[in-house]
Image (cartoon, rainbow, N blue to C red):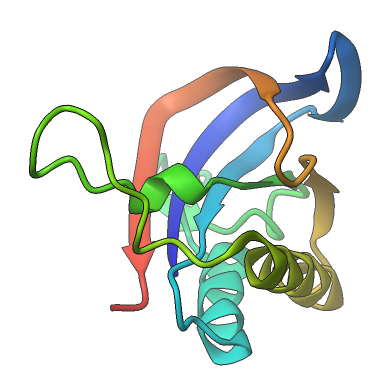
Length: 146
């Protein structure tokens, strides 16, 4: 399992021209599920998301989590994080988990974040989503369970 975490001032997610989710500030998290991933992988990564200290404290140091600053998380499933473009120009997605299982783990990850007291907004699994975000920093962190 792999996540890309971006600190944002605002993110809006739309499908077919309709706004589905919006966060005023916090983290946009893109989640890729690899074939064979388990709930244990999701537990590990969602604990990281909740506690990741990438917001500035009163001294300008990145020392606060999304929970500390009262931010929200927009969690977006993104199988393309497991796109392999080493050969040729068309990525292979053979490492990505099949959609049914990936969606189960995505929903599980949402629940785990919520259980930690994080306000979570969601994307639409499998949809063609349009995402507008105002990155802050920019701060981008990539974490995987491999």
